[in-house]
Length: 431
Image 1 (tube, one colour):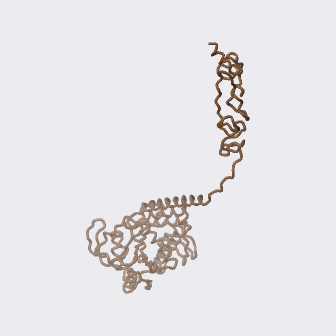
Image 2 (tube, one colour):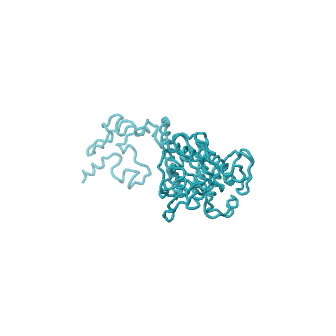
Image 3 (cartoon, one colour):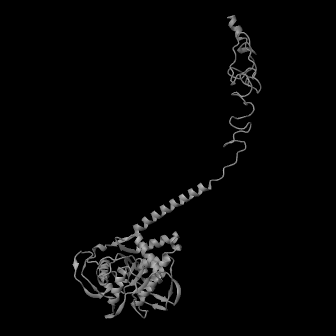
């Protein structure tokens, strides 16, 4: 096939694979690639070299758009260092590029502030909701006021019966000794107060535990059976006989005032709350020394811890006015405690707020309808009394009923109760 071989040998720079010299590639012993003189389709920067012509030599394909003209085709700038889409010779300006970058955009402060505000609001909502359910679960709703019979009609505003009991439940022998509580069995009421809240400011009324009252017919809290009236007795006897529901029944019967909520706290819980809040500052009106309560105070302003606070509110025999003066001291202390609890220093400080709430909620016994908002309203109202927005007084007393019992002044009591029912400003003064 002489003609065919002749055509194949017309390729430039060689006539056969064996005679083309050292090359790079398959079957080649050379270490370098073929030069541009063989790879005619590669441009070196000028015009493309004209293809070889001659009989039997096919025209080489062009990879340059627009034919063999000047720059501007697919290969334009290939050997100039230019990378497509970037300034010539400068490299990419995006991430990873070696060339200079453009100016960075200014921070979007409005967006950052908005995101921060939303995040803080979300954290606040989650914390508030979590705290609410945690606190709500700790309330001991053990008193069912629906079992109280023959109740008076509800008036305007809200009435809380606040009770301090001498309960020693859960206390160790060391605690009983330290707090001077003794080891008596059962529970009695050490203090009783009615707190009225309404549109004319709060009113706090102390009920002396030696008040001479009638214990009326009632329904037993455990048996559910009706029990006959027991005649004249001390007020604190009602609690000793059948607990909170009979006490509520007795207060309602003797005053005609509807009790909406019941709150009780024992000795240990009271002391724990005071310690959790960091003590309560009080102005002691006189030197007090009472071996039975453990009180030993000099006159003047001082901060009382839990043990000292309990001794102060229980002191009776060191006071000339006996039970009436003691109830006044109890009012003063509870107002001071409420004022200290309901302050930004406590509410906004989790290291004080949570221990105080934990100590208080663990110690309180409330009625089944009592909610956290009701409890918070009670504390704010007590703070209002101490801040001058309300009034505090003892139940008006007419004199001694005999056997150490205190007889209420029923004329003043009726006026007081009528004003509270109508949620009017209280004008009655107590002892």
